[in-house]
Length: 458
Image (cartoon, rainbow, N blue to C red; front, side, top):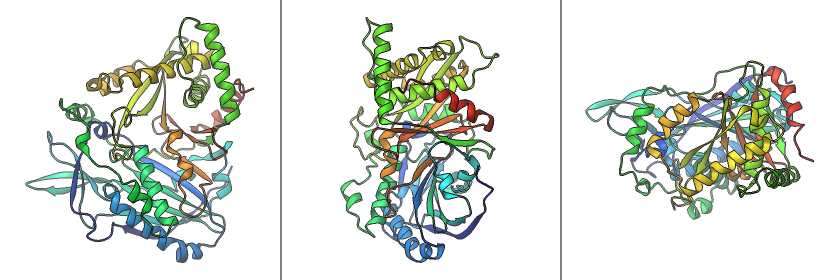
């Protein structure tokens, strides 16, 4: 385990779009956005090899990184703006005003870069990753016409230098501004501009689409969601703790073995029922769900307790929205199974079946029961004995975020653990492989590894 490290702040500044490039613009929150008003801030880390001293980065790389960010923000201006909360019943909105900016911090770290970017079951201290992502400024009060309203900045960025070894780029942002796909569009656009030293071809070919009128809401679902969330405090980030982080990887070969094993079990157990589509997502998340249920199994937990697996599904294709629609467009999906079924010899089959069926229901009717999404979720989770929630998707292709330093050595979702969540992405180890991010108590580390290694990968 790495030793305690020091963080030295080298620069604390702000980056705006080019002056006069974006007019004052207000974007109302849709019901998809309003779902996330009390969500903890999202935190994503990218690590890159950089075998040069700090002075080299500050003189040669930092100016281009900041200039390209400014050019990217010209197109992705909501991230430089603020979330505004006018008095109810008015709708919250995102507003950009000329001169608004993103906090940009540069630090130097004494942490061990190779340790932090380790894969597999190598444990890393969670707080060492937390030190590499910035904090958003707290909400403040501002004038809004004849009244006052609360406002919240939407993004902050921290670049950390590990002298002669590497750098990390950490981003904290409010989920109300964007989901993972929209955020990935921003980071890849920024990276492309940086890599090409100012060429805007990528973002010109794939400009973000802010057309909120594409999200039909004749029943005012946004107001129902806002009322449901009105009593919830907005979380900022997870509390510092002594948890360790690990990155289990399921290889392409193991994925194919899992698919065959589950398909065979399905024939044996359910001959009259067609199996759900056994995608890489379905079979790998089934493994992780079962792992975590077994990890927290004890004599005090009821055998027939209800377990839930919560994961997001992107609605852009289902609602025929542009692929570059910028905002939130996620449906919450909740798979359900009994604890004794998940911990039995056919646990992975049970988990895959539950997750696969939930995806099928989403594909049939992605907005089914939408007005009750939040209230129903609260009731469902209240009955739940154990919840696992998922952040991310292999389809986000985080390892394609290249700023000119090469492909990321590692990417991490830092905020997992604040709500008992895990993360998923494609693996840096090869096409078809999947990696997960987990936050575990130190005493759970060896137990988890023992459980994970028992699965039918062979």
